[in-house]
Image 1: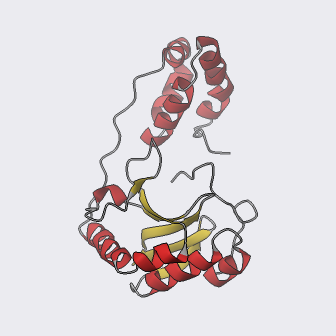
Image 2: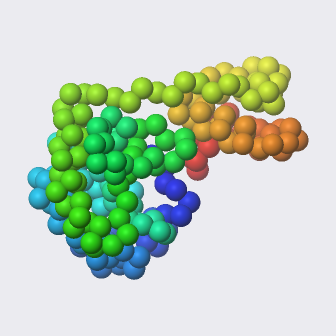
Length: 205
């Protein structure tokens, strides 16, 4: 899972014992979090803190996650792309996200307005999990020319890159290809060679 750059972090991904502690520390959308939490607790989901945020799951399967963003409170469905959206309330998580989609709230009134809609979408998400449905993986992006040259010149690097998970390879492709100039792409590739050789992804430490 990726988090958008405008997400509001509580103490840079601080760990909270429970959602009560999280809510006590919330400064951006505390009233909206409290109102949405009440709706979600009525859906018979298990509540916990994961990735520093309130997460709602069933039998160990993650269903939805609250995200306090700069401009709205989000309820992110992990497999939102597999849900029907008759109300037109699901938004893409980001340009490179295939699975996750989210509802957005900017007031307690927004939460109240969707208080009967949220459980319907939660039930859909539960059905998706029970059926074992999975989002199809994204196709492998076209190889960045600068990366391909570097892999051709170094068999060990090529082997290490091939051994990465598809998701990690995709993140590298997206990052390298986002640079407009060839010199920038080359320097980015070179910078991440040690990480690739270590079997790490773009975001791994």
